[in-house]
Image (cartoon, rainbow, N blue to C red; front, top):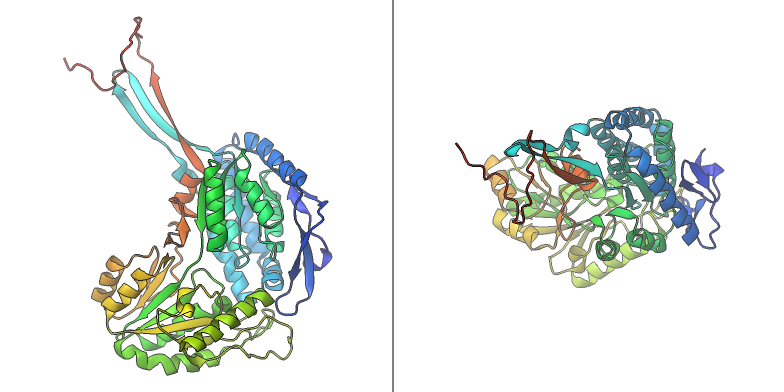
Length: 505
């Protein structure tokens, strides 16, 4: 396969692979087997500068390409993604571990952003007002930023890069992508495909590395914006550095997403939704449900949830029976084991324990089985983002208490309510202080006609990923005031000009 032919990945700069002269490398391992897939270089300063220079040259010419032609590139790109879905999914599963079905979902949710980019011109239009003063017109239009950059996480190797570079490129920018150093392969294939679709060399580039590369991108004066998805520790650091360097920045970070189950909910639908949202992708989603708030008599449904979770098959992502794949690394597994052990010491009740799950064919995999803990909000398992197939269950006497629990949590990526009552759901959506809300929908990630509107400590920046907000993020407004009066004034005027103050005769 494509992955097996790679030993040390090259950067992708100006339309071609650029082998690195790095002295430090990151190992890319199959999380189900620990087999070494490839090695990723920590880019040298010279390589990073070369990448920015290529992007700077490309942005000057690409910004002058008609928006119609830029959209046509996106049309061809979305077709190529569809044609190569199976290939892309196999790369994702090999490097990231998620099931092949989930990998295809990863690709499809990114593809939706490319489809939106195919019609982005209608969101790039400016505004015009004729005759703001006698014979004077004002109009504005949106222009590209120039060189833009993105830093992406391990959990969505296709979707999150596709949140970024298609929208940046269709708006007329060039883009530098630093993919996660543990799942780089999918990004390479996507960039090859967009170039096959007609995107000129240098418009989308890949530079590899870890924190050193991220810091370089944050501080280089020729880069206009940074998009980041990942941990809060990294995101807050990137936000500080890049904003201080004068860049436009958007950072999507940690989350603790609650689902409220009311006793009047459709029980089967609600519990099935919880199983998928808590344990799908091994819980490694920033929109996974990690807390279930059981209101009143819904607490009696917990044993039924446990029975459903017990039936899930934990195995390698390539196993067609697999429901839950491995965690990304042995270190991630150790961290989660520590959090569960701490929860037990704090008095949490373990209804289902996935710590000692055995996957016979894959004894070396980073597997962690579905785990259900009954806890309180004072416990660390509630307060920390676990990022694993661990569901924390807490009880609430009524809907107001459930709302209070969620609003007191510092994170605000997403939340959901399961109920048969329109009155309750409307009260919930109007009372809750979270950016994305599902009503009988467990993972309310908006389709790209809207934007990804996480809030509170889950988001830094006031312009969101994809949708109309992405066009605003990747462009700036230029406003022109023009005077084409037949008779232009011939005198010197020292006072501040006042528009719109004509004398009405």
